Amino acid sequence: MIKKLLIANRGEIALRIVRACKQLGIQTVGVYSTADDNLMHLRFVDEAVCIGKPNANQSYLNIDTILTAAEITGADAIHPGYGFLSENAEFSERVEEAGLTFVGPEAEHIRLMGNKISAIHAMKKAGVPTVPGSVGSVTLANAEAQAKNIGFPLLIKAAAGGGGRGMRVVERIEHLLPQVQAAKQEAELWFGDDSVYMERYLKNPRHVEVQVLGDGNGNALHLFDRDCSLQRRHQKVLEEAPAPDIADDIKTPILQACVRACEQIKYRGAGTFEFLYEDEQFFFIEMNTRVQVEHPVTEMITGIDIVVEQLKIASGYGLSYHQDEINVRGHAIECRINAEDPMTFMPSPGVVTNLFAPNGCGVRFDSHLYPNYAIPTFYDSLIGKLICHAQTRQQVIAKLHQSLDELIITGIKTNIPLHRDMILTDPNFCEKAQNIHYLENHLLKKADKK
Ligand code: ADP
Image (tube, rainbow, N blue to C red; front, side, top):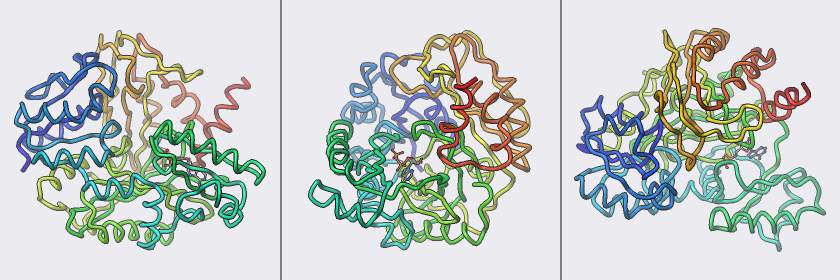
């Protein structure tokens, strides 16, 4: 078993990882930037090392400094969390070259999935259905021919893209070349790689994803699925598990295809296959080779601690479960709580003057907040995740209402009203899962008109 783990992350996920380590008797090393010496998880780690300035490039993204911190503390493994270096193949390579264990997949698989063109190619080969789209990368020379095969509207996406950035919808062929050119420039600027590809722009899909675990030796299993369709600017706002209203005979083959794909490539660790779901069909869009923000909803319905499983797999213990031991129990929904103005969505960092976290049966609040905690301006605005679990989706929604009423965070603005007063009171959402445009094009527009 890993003996001492360095957590190369901050915020709620760092605290989440500390908890899993304590359960397994693993010692922990926290790292922090100079803007972050007040982080909650630093109170629970065995050792803490300052790794540099607030700007993430000079701390949480600095591979050399993080490896030095591991060396001086004698850590034998590193967990990257999500974001920052979690999907950086060079980081995983450097960790292993230093003789340490990287809690995640092999660099080769991070690289394969990090480039969406190669990811889609690999999935097609493994028999996973993908969105009809371009073959290989799109250039100014081949764009028109590729587009004619796909049809309009289509979406230009950056091969190295992430975080919902760098996507352009093209409605007509006249707009294609200027858009390809602009997308390439943008991709180069944001991701340091100008390759782009194209996909059919699906009109009203849902975002449905499959959680998997692989042992790296060709064994894998799935932990069922999640629906993450409520998004703003392609960023998830609320997630639920299992994905509602999809018949077993449509879902099961996809779950099995994901497992087969993991087995074929000998995938190691936790991963997520993301799909768009429209007209009872699944279309693969990308794979995330790390733990996801929304992993708790899966933990609630399966009773499996995904971070504990990541640590066990990285320690060489393999998978703790057989597929037939994993069942869905009830329903779970997560509300991402952000420090932001609920009307303008502008970040709202500052001091949390008061905090009361809701509680009770099936209520979970994953957060690093505490009274008088000063939220720094340098990082993303996620300050917590409120997750509720109950027998039915309706009961979960009722429980979330109650819990959001109880959740008191003062001193800063949060998006609690967005969840409580807009999403969870909307009759359409309460009746059934909605598509990826619903929050922006329906709920937020309705609020604007008021
Ligand atoms: P990123 O890695 O930047 O998050 P994804 O490929 O995962 O990008 O897509 C993010 C979101 O963009 C999806 O959840 C969906 O809302 C939208 N999207 C992506 N591809 C398509 C498509 N082909 N048609 C319609 N919407 C899409």
